[in-house]
Amino acid sequence: MITIGDVEKVLRERGLLAGYDRKKPGAESPQVQSICGNDIAEPVLWLTCDSRTVEPGTLFICKGAAFREEYLREAAEKGSIAYISEQEYAAGRGLAAFLVSDVRRAMAAVSALFFGYVPGEPRLTGITGTKGKTTTAWYLKAMLDAWEAEQGKPETGLISTVINYDGMRRQDAVMTTPEAPVVHELLANAHQQGLRYLTMEVSSQALKYKRVRELRFDVGIFLNISEDHISPQEHCDFGDYFSSKLSIFRQTRTACVNLDADHAQKILDAARKAERVVTFGRHPRADYRYSEVDRSGSRISFRVTCSRFSERFELAMRGSFNIENAVAAIAAADVYGVPVHCMRQALAQTTVPGRMETFTSSDGKLCGIVDFAHNRLSFERLFDAAYQEYSQYGRIITIFGCPGGKALNRRRELGVIAGLFSDYVCVTSDDPGTECQENIAAEVRGYVEMTGCSCICIPERAEAVRAMIAYAKDQKGKSLILLLGRGSEKYQRFGEGLCEYPTDAQLMRGSLEEYDARRKYLNIET
Image (tube, rainbow, N blue to C red; front, top):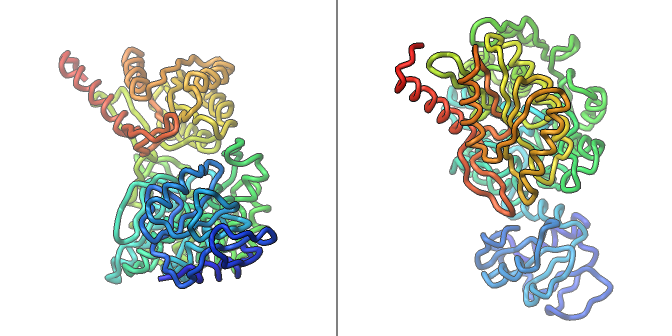
């Protein structure tokens, strides 16, 4: 348990408190940023930045551009004893007030203190990149799980876009990398449950806004980089996005770098901040080099050569781009000392919800692929896989959308790529938020049609999938239907809130089952 005095001490040590004044709330102290409150021994029983989860004895953190004073008022009414903020609020009168220069750094520092974070307990892998974080995390976790099982140890932990697992609970994820209090709670639970390893995705937003500032990564993986998340709400330009990603190496022991990535030399230069650097990729100088790719049959296999072994591996998932994710996981697993047979077993068995999930109609005419592809790099690689691995389908129908208010560059990039490589495109909803969905779709449609590809807009995602199945049914020959952008996500953002929504896999499976049922009803022969 920590106290008000402990909070003051750690904030002072980090240089976040410009001054210190233990006067009664409301006393004037114009020259210093201060903590106001009398009892430094008062215990802090909980820590949160979400007023909905406040309970008596909570230290509440006022963070973010969307913060409203009413959140602090609600926290006070629920029994909060103190708050951390970059400014003083009337709603916090009567509470101890920590006024700081950087509330996000303060949140990370106090979260680490409250939950008792100790580097290496569990050993932590951070994975960043524009594409492939989730699949790489699942691959690495599966390798570590196989190794731990052989030693009679518990399943390893995971913080990902899909689920979070800390040894106590397995929960659907709300964001790629949670806020610092949630991250540290997950790590504390993992340590308490005896988990020796935890693998986590690290988003550019998490790095920019210091959610992982206090963490130490035993291994930090940098997969790739392309322009994404550029908007007033995210990153002002590519330089800001890239530098945010590169900052992971400041807190990494062993850096794993993809030599095939764009800007690889700049990534390697930044990786020198780590104690050790290993490389992976197809590049001849990669420490973990893959070659001899075989796409025959329904599975992909390849060879990985390094100083310790030269072995063939096989993937349970389609998509040649997943080789890169697999080799990244192999490199990290080898750093930890995972045996090769555990790596091989994991890759041969692991699939990821919402990533290259494939559904086929009973007559073989229609094949639906659900994938999380939602930016330029992932679109390019997915269409490349579609042409190479699904060439028996003569027609490509693509269904996707773009989010409202962020990643604005995707509208042009995804519209053009989809138009160039599809025979027909349907633009639909994908987290429109407070922006008008019809306006988003119209903008994207304009870019699709620039390429000469036919395009339709259907705002309701479920209706869009049914309509494209019906369209494909009426065409001659086989069709490949790509449903992109949301993967296994169970919510869409409409207006200010999140609304439950079927996953893309549920939509695709359901629509193809309706197609099969109708064929059976009409007694159509295969």
